[in-house]
Amino acid sequence: MEIKNIPLNELDVEPINLLKKMLQIRKFEEKIEELFLVKGTLIGPAHLYLGQEAIAVGICSALKKDDYVITSYRCHGHAIAKGVNIKKLMAEMFGKETGTCKGLGGSMHAAISPEDGLIYATAIVGSQIPIAAGLALSNKYLNRKIATVCFFGDGAVNTGAFHEGMNLASLWKLPVLYVCENNLYAEFTHITRSLSSKSIAERAASYNMKVFIVDGNDVISVYKVAKDCIEKIRNLNGPIFIEARTYRMKGHGVYDQAKYRDPNEVNEWLQRDPIRIFKEKLIKEKLLDEEGYKKLEREVINEVEDAVRFAEESKVLEFNELEKLVYFEK
Ligand SMILES: Cc1ncc(C[n+]2csc(CCOP(=O)(O)OP(=O)(O)O)c2C)c(N)n1
Ligand SMILES: [Mg+2]
Figure 1 (tube, rainbow, N blue to C red):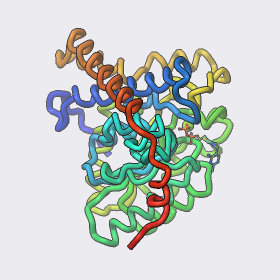
Figure 2 (tube, rainbow, N blue to C red; figure 1 turned 90 degrees about the vertical axis):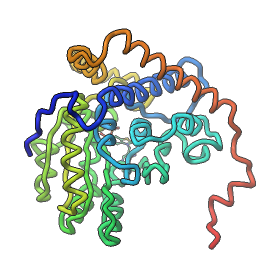
Figure 3 (cartoon, helix red, strand yellow; figure 1 turned 180 degrees about the horizontal axis):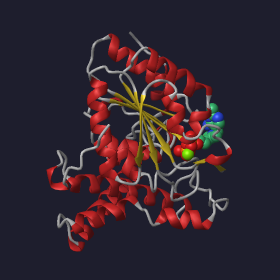
């Protein structure tokens, strides 16, 4: 597919809104890290999305509110990009009843919010891939023009669920966009030690579906490819696969210091910070100046602070409310 080189001011989305969404994810994740490691307010598992912001924002900006998203435990960025209220998301981190899962899901399931089109966030690597095929099958069967986007990591392509899901999605021409966020690591294992095929894209292509490789640190490239893919998917032309190449700035989970990574590799990727790259592009195109950036950053930091206050002041779900969430009354 040819990706047209549209000037930034002719995009059908405001570039500044893309930057703001990326900043919301960045500041949210930085605050989560601080709440875990500095303040000790939060405990348990959390997998930060720092460095991968351009993928969630580029893809989700091409979606409608009722399009479906299904993802993994590294899900905070997808939730924000798909439009979850930041207060609700923060409350979930604090285990409060005002959270997306009433505080019962925590970080790894925080991106479950059906009213925002976020259907599920799973901790079982790769399991979202066949579930996405099922979601897309239901939409096709019911003739709904809803696109399903399935996010997963490079590690997930080595699971059985990947092969099962990809095979059915292709065979039944299901309206699903598979987005593999290749950040080079599955926990502590570099991709060169886990992948037998030449590339992830090549493996996906063997399932007879259209495949694209995109620079996952360039929000505009991600947005453009997503926009074209979603259009095709909505028209029931079968699944499409995007391999978005990126890097996680920090460790696998919030406690992991990632000392197993080559410092040269880390430094090289830190030079490619998706937010800095896009900010500089906007400044060069005279769509933003330093002062405007600082103002935006401050606005987002305040929004995250408000979310923390909201989460702290919220209550934990009453014990007797629990069974209402387990059993379903007709
Ligand atoms: C089926 C399964 N196998 C193993 C694990 C343990 N595990 C948790 S995260 C992870 C790495 C996954 O890496 P990747 O898919 O690249 O996603 P990333 O964390 O980089 O976003 C593994 C192996 C698991 N949760 N589920
Ligand atoms: Mg990975």
